[in-house]
Length: 404
Image (cartoon, rainbow, N blue to C red; front, side, top):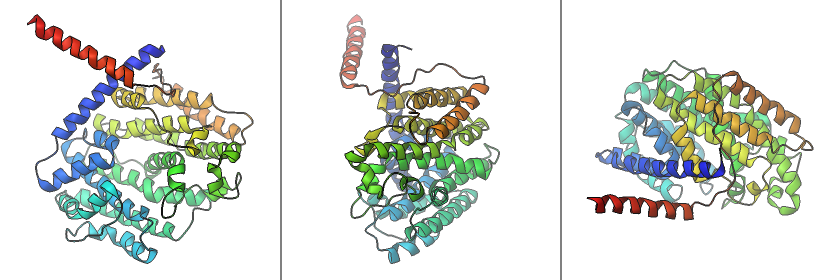
């Protein structure tokens, strides 16, 4: 696919994505508590709001509340201004608070503080869910809060610690979603191992991408890169952000990405078993974004300089074009090729990186479902293209108007 054709596809996808976002805003329920929940969902995560709101009505409500409850729990965990002796019991008892509309604890900033300050509305919506959904959300919240409490008092030292932390904050989300799908009668119950990998792949990708934001957090940073990995490249984790350490920083980054890639095959297996198309898109779009983020972060010193993420146009294409396992296999294959093209044989992790990338490529090729997508990770400027598209649409509108 040529560059011009690829850009054109991205422009069309962007228009579709914005139209979908506008439709979602019009679909917000009228009841105060549900209106609050869906409004907050859009504010704390636009991308998840889009994929959640295309689920079936009953499951959509359950997943919306599940997501917001865990975001509220995460807000408490992330707020480094809360003293440990205050934070620990809140994390450990949070699963009880979701049943109590009178409970309140102000924390976080911006939209997250609004969510916490209006927790009664979230609790009210939770209490309207079917008991099966409530029990799943309660159980996962209880286990996650307990796990978070462990790591408030413990650093991530080993790779095993890293896997445990990611399990508590994301693998358990995979468990919960699989149970919600099963409770809704739309899917067979997936194995815990595969469900865990779905969460770990997303979480590890976010931890890698957010290095600079996390290390610079005020009043103090909380980091989850395991010492077992970063200590091979630096005396202090903070040293990785300094330009004079760029070579070692990138080697450490590549080690981290290689660690994340071990979960990719499990994710493909999980998604291939999904039956309901809306569940499939809900799961597949974030996973494709994750493999794309791994590809753009790999061997990229900009992770230590600023924000690194997939450009909006490509994100829009992923949202628009992800409809089947063929699309997933094709995206994973193309992003794996892009990552592979960046491997330096002098990198200490290069042999293991190639092994894991080859495993993903082999899984995708053996499906027999590959098709050409033409994804790339180059930066593209859209402003002048948007202006041209807007002018073209105005011209078409005026032409139709005058023809009448």
